[in-house]
Image 1 (cartoon, rainbow, N blue to C red):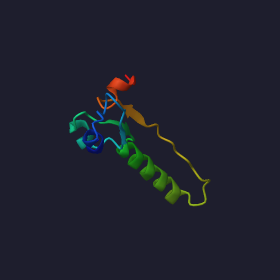
Image 2 (cartoon, one colour; image 1 turned 120 degrees about the vertical axis):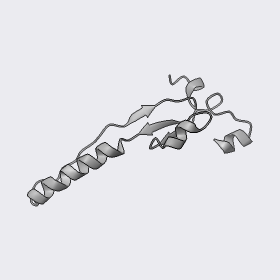
Image 3 (tube, rainbow, N blue to C red; image 1 turned 90 degrees about the horizontal axis):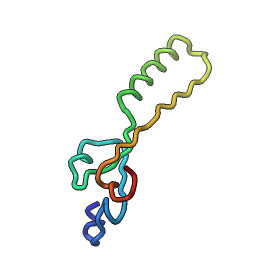
Image 4 (cartoon, helix red, strand yellow; image 1 turned 60 degrees about the horizontal axis):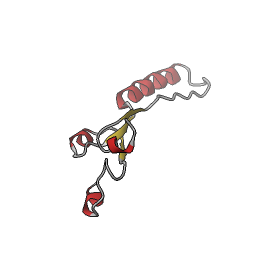
Length: 83
């Protein structure tokens, strides 16, 4: 976003800017960064459960777990019609 500002482009007004992983610094930036939150804690909990199942049953079938991400809309996208 600093690079955009250096070129006279205003994030949230001229372009939408979206990050990933919902790091705390994103909310503190101006404009605050819209982000995709992945729920790292939930991923870790599911990974631990999967590991325990695999230890209990090493020959069990492969498993796939998909946890939905969450879009956190902040001011880096407000002017872009995302709210």
